[in-house]
Length: 284
Image (cartoon, rainbow, N blue to C red):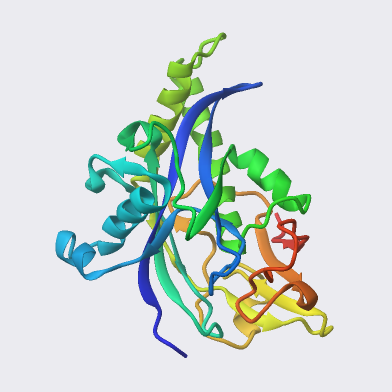
């Protein structure tokens, strides 16, 4: 088993209004078809820690890596790196040849400055930026219209649960007006970020196993009922984070047909961006 490299990811939340009220979208970017890890998949901007990151923040160099990669990949400069909110912690399965120990951080788009007036991807490592609400990203994924790695999906599931918790909080204190404005959406994001500071992410290492039927590769999450009995490294955990909002019937394992995957469960470059994962959910 190779030692995973430290890394950081940035999930940028942009306040917006949806048909049913205050909401937010999250930035996703498509990795290069030639990438050696998660090729052609939509992910949060991010990358591995370098020496300068460790010097800037010895405790959480991944925080600096997330901010730096966000600037390099999407042209969004973070004014205060220390403000980033640690949200999830993913470790690549032990069966993978290329591994990362990555922390995912949340931040508001309002905390950034766009170097080019808007998001502009580098066109080398990442392409085709998308702003999607968590609900829309999950819908497209489940419909086979959006290629998302399972850890990204699990993180987005948590984002949607935290959105609902933040809405309930605002409703309870009478801060949800009958006619929401863009400012209401900004308050929603601020409330979510404040609440999420209390989260304590678990070190999640999914397992990568051959499907018993021999037709594909299964990515199994640490809360799957059969996780402990499967081969490979990784601890059982009940959710993405301690202190997180509840996710009903969260995705527990995903099967990708071998014809569409390589050893890193990435989509082959010649395949379509649309990938149909076969989903199993944890029981309620």
